[in-house]
Amino acid sequence: MSMPITVARKKSAWKEIQSRTKIKKRTKLALGVLALIAGLLIASWAIRFTQSLFSPYIWNGQFNINLLVRNPRIFLLSYNPKEEKITILNIPDELFLDVPFGFGKWQLRSIYELGQSQKQIGGDRLLADTLTNFLAIPIDGFLDFSALQDQKSATEVVEFLRKNPFSGLNFLSALKTDLTIWELLRLKLGMGRVRFDKVKELNLDKLSVLDRENLPDGTPVYTTDPVKLDSVLSDFADPAITFEHKTIAVLNTTGQPQLAQKVARLITNLGGNVIITTNASQKLQKTLIQGEQSLTLRRLKQIFRLSDKINSSDENIISSRAQINVLLGEDRL
Image (cartoon, rainbow, N blue to C red; front, side):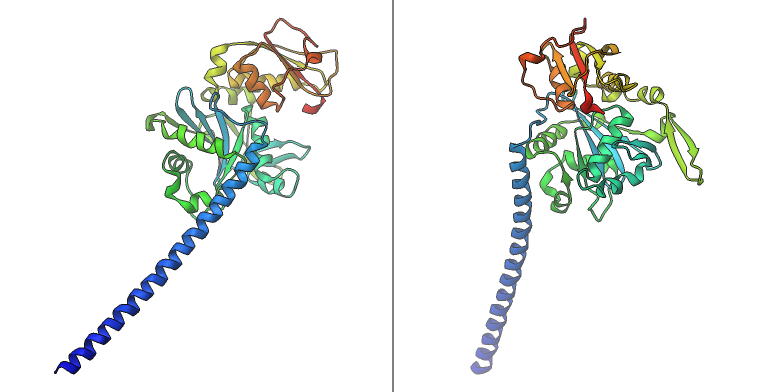
């Protein structure tokens, strides 16, 4: 009787060893896959970190940050660190917009592919520039989640960004952005402090500021009047700029009609106090911003991608009674 029992025990022990071996192999395989994913993520973050070292402008949390989000539906995300609030603006695909760089008018839904066909521009960047001109709100960067298999609403994207960033590796690996790692971390930490009741969502097509029209081929599109549009964008004003209330003059040195008015509209929507918009007799090749050292001056230089260093030859090149002078050069055309 002992022989069959011994054989049975040996078979049982052998099966247990085989089972443990299979479990170990599966565990190693799973760990290997996780290590590969982690390695790819670390590599991508390392690349962004290296790029951030050479980026001249990094958002430091002193101002609002406005981001284009593509998921693939497009919305504008604005985080206000001073008041700890978030504003979401959903934008309909049927908007008919002027596209910069001489591309003419296009529907919003087509602008990304247009930008992708231009290697020196890119789809997200062309979308951001187009919406900056349309909304007269400076867009500081983009978050592109369009590679995700599962499409998420604007609220779902924002809720994820407010929570643990490591809770969804797939979500992070699908992210394409021009923000630096420091900006992403600061954005995540800041948005995580925002209370749920300070997240506001707006739908541009439900704010009674868009007009429905048809193109010659019958395609329905939305257009709008800038004055009506600006009346619903008060949530995007920057409290740091509004609080300082610096007087600002916008002077067009190019001779291009309406350039000063367009820039003044953007500065006003930002919360700036524009008191002068006019043409200047002196011509400048490059845009210049000069005036009292302040958060407002720093933010304007950031928006226009200007050096924060003061060149003595630029001082008082054109004077006005405003505290800050924005002189628009040929580089703005």
